[in-house]
Image 1: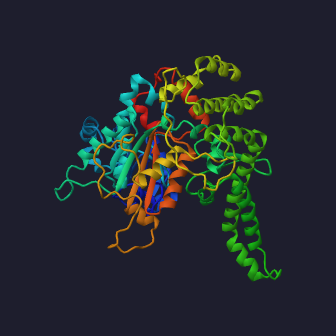
Image 2: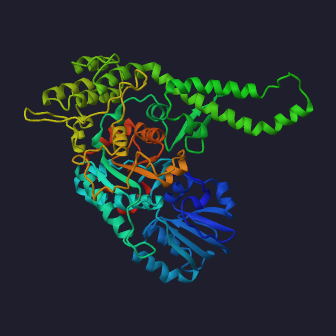
Length: 576
């Protein structure tokens, strides 16, 4: 996804570039490019200026311009305006993120044909969030997925974006789905679209399915994981700290306001983000001491030669110290919240989620576990999360008990925080005739875990079962027959020469792609890396409509009672 051996523009598409040029971007492609390119990468491709398509720009008639934009009427109109009367640039090299409708293309041809040197669609209408994570939208779209009036209209946009992701990966996967309506509709749409695209390959033969499997799920398959207090670094930080657009804002030791980007460019973040906060808090101070110690002269002598060597290393030294200081501060912020209330909440949450206490004793009365949370002065959101875990543990509760719980949390005026989970297919109210069968979970009693991190996201079970070909076909139907070639577990034939698996081997071998309609949590993202590392022969990639934090999800759930946003149009979809 975001990672790869190529850099710059080559990393995201097949660009044919003129020499010394201007790059013009819209808001979506600006975000897209920032996930996988630095300014130095652009400079290496001889791009000297980067401009905003929508803003007023000075003409540079002696230079050629590259337009990397989404195929919307707003973008195309802005492009035409650059050439319709007096051309701003010598020539235009146009690259669309995906398919450009005929009417927009014809308008471009009508007014700008003599200036267009290249016009290509490069199939990259998704956001590469991390090395093994991609999202279709940058903001929450849960209300659009589950609001019945616009559901089918909006779901029709998913296949296109999901297909661009698969085409970029070079995948023609077998498609399976959880037995839920939205997942089934999306699976059918994606399969049909891919079949049309791959109907004939370059040699005129029908393309065969690749060594890949796509599984489509809905958010309701696991309501527990996205609302638990997680104690791994990334999940904890995004839950407890106000991090927006992957930007952490903090005060330095001298009191000045600073900010840092938490992304793939921060190698320390990549190294630590899936570790438990206890390990992170221990490792960062140790790293700082090691760096400081490495800069001291072993013989204690200060010479001109030693000073010269130290000066040469100062920029790298400062960068290392800055990175580790940022994460020391972030880890301290997380631990502050942990010490205040999260530790106590975690014990109750884990018991409710797992169904047993730390000693393995079954929780016979979940209300006794919940009651201390309701009686303590925790925040409204923390109490809602605990109440929901209580209800999920029972697969629903009575209407009378639900009203009492809503009164305890003091959300009588906004019961939608809890009631609206039914829109995701999660049972909230039970009746005498109601029966709900919980999915069978893998036995992880032998796994080494922290006492307050015993819960394993359901999606990890799904990933492992898929890799081992153990998914129940009744619960996980396929759009087409799963070919014998699929071998996610990487079993090696006796005739094959066995060799160690590397990341590049996995990228050209089996690939499991999980797509969740309605958002994914940080803990579920982590599972893709864990299963890939454990299996070695199969790369697991996870994608979704958007990334969730517990607060975002609860606000989304509450908003499901409202109508669709009147201001939302199909034109806006590239900016959400």
